[in-house]
Length: 76
Image 1: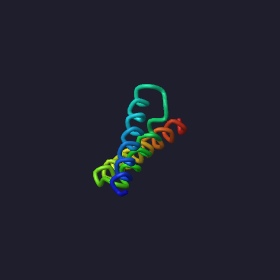
Image 2: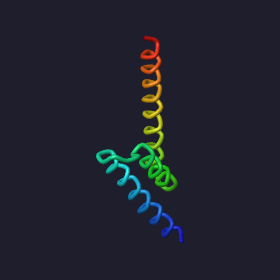
Image 3: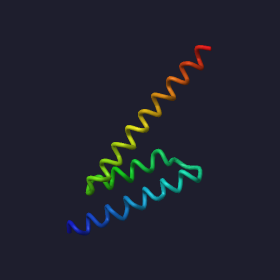
Image 4: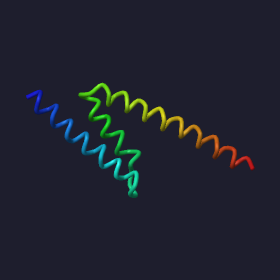
């Protein structure tokens, strides 16, 4: 039963991540889809958890950078 669960999580997680990667090129919510797939894969694989944390950190840094740019633009 555990093998079936792990296989199912792996297949669905990889599928979701691949859809997210496709949405990087095509218009779509890649920023939402990729972390969802990584979160699913992180249930079974520690490396996916590491990638998810890295993705979250990079998104946080990008949001802070964008906030500072918007604040500077509004001060003009």
